[in-house]
Image (tube, rainbow, N blue to C red):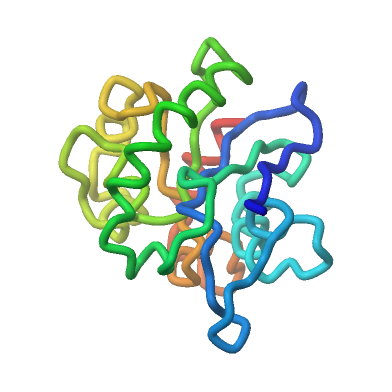
Length: 185
């Protein structure tokens, strides 16, 4: 069975959080079975914890988001190794767009994407590196515009990789980017 989306309260949604797909083989090279996207609510926050820390850093909580994967079924390989991922994601894209449009038809809720590959896939324009975006050396308003992507919503990098942690108080490397995201809510 494929994991389901997660949403605590549809009336409180301030952002969509979008992962790549549920596939991971971190259990002794065995596929990890999840009930909800990123295993939210399973008692093991391992997969969602970096995202949750980033959400908290910009003033959001688990109660403020709708969490889903672009590819909503398990794959044979993890997304970074899956050469077919873009084709599978293209198949899922209309379903995802319809899902988001049902939840919020006006299209004003931003989509926080948890990996660079998702951002590049969704974008209709060339994407600068994550480092350029997070350090505000790239024109974020232009590359994140709803007119420039396949979801027709504002999309913003919100990578779960530790390099892009927004919640690290000791090293506030991405301070300006964090403040931009904080202004969204």
